[in-house]
Length: 93
Image (cartoon, rainbow, N blue to C red; front, side, top):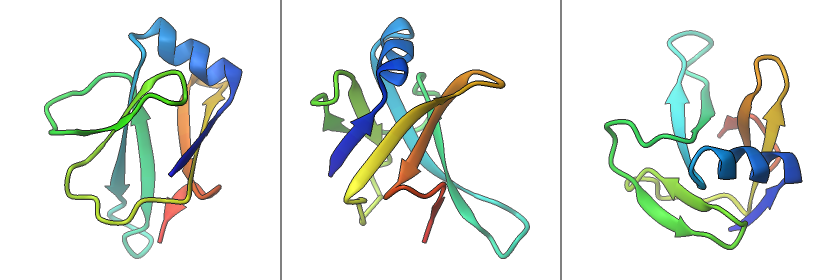
């Protein structure tokens, strides 16, 4: 998996401890659409480390069997937060 992160995203992740946790969340509406959630705190979930070649440590859920070819990481401005995109999409098929 190739991690493509903007410089602004790398800086924001570094300012919050240098770790990024990306999980899949499933909506209750819209046919159960699955999107990505990115945060800089682990919370109560279990995680597996993917590596730190992007300048930060990346963690994904341990049960995730299919990894994307590319994981894009950027900063959303309003409200300012980290966003992750699986193969360039905000949703996971």
